[in-house]
Image (cartoon, rainbow, N blue to C red; front, side):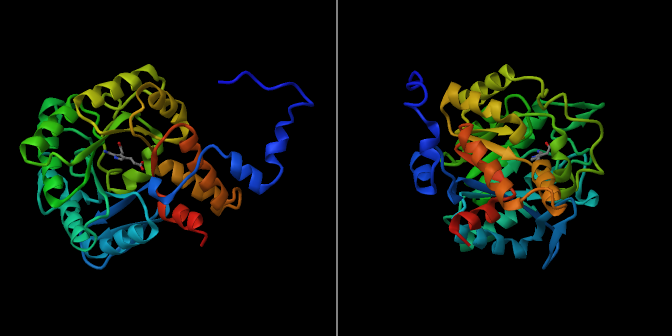
Length: 333
Ligand code: PBG
């Protein structure tokens, strides 16, 4: 960092803010559609596009209506699409076998998308919560979330997603050792080009509330996720998790939630220089939407400001439900 320039009046820092052209010239960060990963929800049934009540403007789509969303992502130049399944209570079990079913909603959706848009980058979520009758990201045995047996299941789940055509595997479960095990599983199954974007620093957060409605987990979840997701009082621990996941074979890492954790994004980027992502999660989206709907905030402006904040904090990309709306703003329509 340069020492500060000469004192006033030789230095007038307002000079470089005087008009839009000059501000553009000295602007340090930029957003583009390719920075955004758009989370999209896929469900059973046919010809369904239903709005999620706690997430206005976000929809669950049946597999036959998912390609429209993929086409929209492609036309807007989004960086990637990330698929999450919605599973009703009747589709959930203790064994979570749906998670590695080659014909589950997500795997069918990947194949449908890749048949039409082979070059659209498709990411998946790896965790058991969307298939588990308990709503937890791992198997529950005697009230405990067991680690190693869960990791074996996550490997099977990830390999089936890769087989269906996923480009990026996103383990969001926070079990220990899963990145290394998934990397090994992918290599052995011949998917050496499939990438892992690990949810490395994922906090136990109340900001996930609307998402759990979106995937049908709200009614299912027993207790909380504090024995595997991080304590929001911690910061050094995030660096240990990122170091661990990179060493185990993660290609990219994520901090989650986003806006309240920009300090973590900056530390991670500075410490490792690895491709770093943040997830602007459901609660962050819904609170901005709610404030805008109530006339308290200007939706478009807070959306763009919140997304730029991630770039300023060192993120290379952002998972955000605003992805298509923000891409439209950037495209000028
Ligand atoms: C679960 C998962 C969660 C989210 C993404 N993957 C919820 C959780 O950990 O309980 C949250 C995303 C959001 O809130 O937008 N594996």
